[in-house]
Image 1 (cartoon, rainbow, N blue to C red):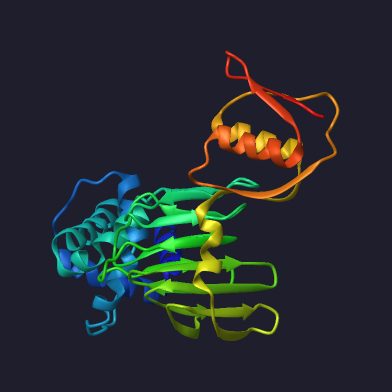
Image 2 (cartoon, rainbow, N blue to C red):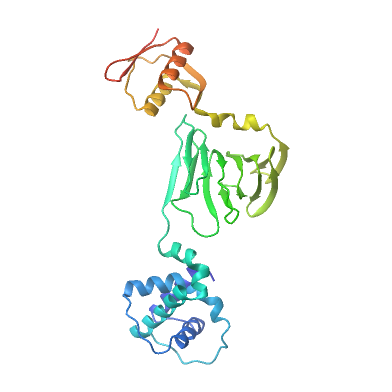
Length: 321
């Protein structure tokens, strides 16, 4: 039974509608707590019971079932149940094994989501020191801290991972269609509408779709998964070509000049003064991580013949030919 099922057991118990099976589970724990009484708030006892009771099921199954009288709920008896659970998980073996999953259920770790802008290529550092590069429009969600025995992140779009090595905690990347498992390596995951691709730069990764293994990839290999046919194709990959976009900070393909200018201005936190009429020009090109504001503006001027100048207030004034 999963956590939702046990929460239903607790609700039935609180409402006096528990079944014989529900009562058996709870009474077994009453036997082990004796006649001790504990002081717990109503809110605390319900949180403890609803969230932690599922972890006790395996242990209670070892006790021999007996015929029992119907059990009715009394406040003190309920507090003993909650306290017995609390004592066990804080002092016993079960508490040690499940300490982090239980803590995460009671006080979930906050999730962070980062998304690259329409033309932006963005770097992000995860809590375990893993470095992630998001291609234009890509996003990643990850916990504010990693606990337990694995690290996870969920992505959309194209993302390059440089995984911090931790042999005790595999890193699992989830996409809408794939799961990629690694220990310490670098690879590119690209999720598209019809397909998903994993390209390994260094190390090894395991790729699965809907919990079905697709491939175990080494460096220089790629798997492409067709979402419609649910078939996977393995092939060698040009590592330098796959990684080319990660060395850029912006990427534009036939984008109206005004949008390019606004994206650059936003990146450098400067103001623009544009002519009242659109230029009708488009720009295609990439800017590297080392390009300064002046470098970008000089490249735009060369490619589109615009004129630009920055006044004393830091405002960039644009004029068209």
